Image (cartoon, rainbow, N blue to C red):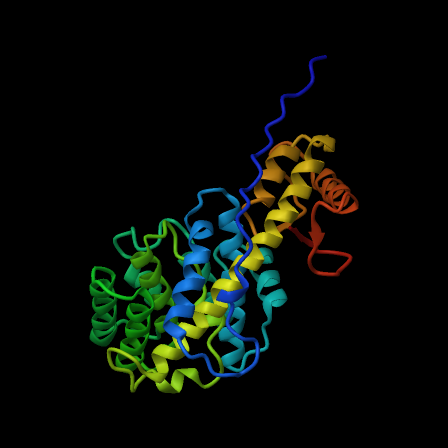
Length: 313
């Protein structure tokens, strides 16, 4: 009998390591030129952000998870990255993901190509991040759209949008940071936004936002450093995922399950995946496939539980 044709994705591209001189100091020491540091860090991230390989979707989902967990923590919630992932992948269609889950939904949406291309994206965003859709929210979104078309520093535009959003709607801090990342990506001509800012602002930085005016300010400096930290962390994450993807692709020819090639493709573009019935495989064979992948060090089990497990790079 003829062997089954294999469809194995191409490996993700590799990029130069993130330059050490563009990394912000890990300690709290002052940075003399935060504008330059942010620009250098985002320039180093630019080739990754502009690449079209499917692993970019997984990369953005991991960054979205970090942003949502940081925001949940700031709001005094108990959900960490593991809990958010667990609730997301084990929820049923139509379930309300809850307040923290809505944060994750919003940031995963930020990292999708369709962002802002649907006619009612403002209403969808408001449903996730704002308790009401009012004139102040409309003004906030209009200002963000205006900044997308402007000139000058991308980080300056992102900082201005976040500050304006917090002045107009101080009850919607996540909205301000979401719009900032969207504006930054548009200014940098990235094909899809990259969730960065929310996970890397320090506690207390937001208190400077309302007093921000165009030009240098403590808020602008905080955004510069947050984007520099975020770009460095995002580049490191991509390098780690690319190494893990190469292990998965090296193991792929050894897999024999009917859904094996499809599952390999899914694992390259999705944060996590439960073992479940597929198009051509049973729940049992799906579990065996993941157990085989774990034994080959091609994927990891992400929950540490004996049941209701999740697997990912």
